[in-house]
Length: 359
Ligand SMILES: [Fe+2]
Ligand SMILES: [Fe+2]
Image (cartoon, rainbow, N blue to C red):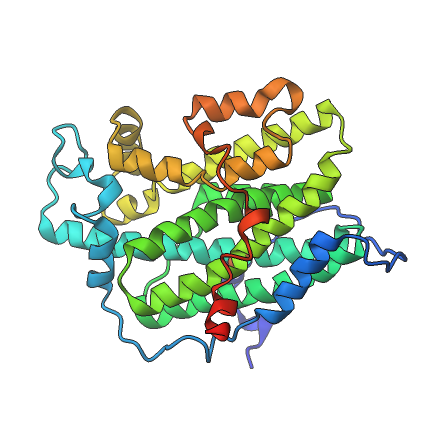
């Protein structure tokens, strides 16, 4: 056992990140199961639990260089392909071996951010158990706490055993998670986590699952996505009811929170930590990406919003307060997803755990 007093203070500071918040914990004495949508979701969650130790084949050998090659498609690193040979590129001097390293580091970084985001989800969901005033939501949120513990477990194990390297949390993701956890309004925990962070994660997991041929990562993402679809649906079903009763000014505050979150989430996929590790000025890469559009990068950045936009529409957030959020999503070029299926409608179809058990 470690003697806490003997641990170097700086090491503790580096390992633990405390977020201060004033939150109200709510009991409810109304045990009536009055929300059938949430009740159905809870029942689904109880039946689709899986075991990270026994339901995935951890004996599979993983070659990080092969995994990274898959990420790139036809060019070394796919969405960063224009950095390879553009005359203004700050990494113009990189040769084949540097690009292979970029691919490996990118994979480590993306999966590390998934890991840290999963821990954020674990904390947010345990918060929701305390703060949400409805019994059906407390029941459901408690199943999500278990799901998120499992997700932290699988990403941590994959990084540790299969890739061998882990990145610290990206500053944009960290600032967003801090803001979500600092806010005392219970619905903002849902909006920040279930709608924005998890909505984006669901799209990003889907993208990576399609891009990779590595069987363990494919299975891992397949099962994590089954859970994530329920989590996003939980946000949609809960907030749909609550936002129906808010004023235009209150909804405008939520719109601004959502858009701010969207911008920071998009920025984190610049993966500046990777360029810094490669010995390059991250700001120079960021400036290049700002000023040079590239089709594969644009498709990726846009696709990240394919779940967020229809879910915001279902919540009435696009058109509340004179359509403020519709205007913002139009400006950043993602409004075309508004009529795609929302996650409250599709979560059952995405339950691969149930499909495996039935088959
Ligand atoms: Fe998760
Ligand atoms: Fe989740």
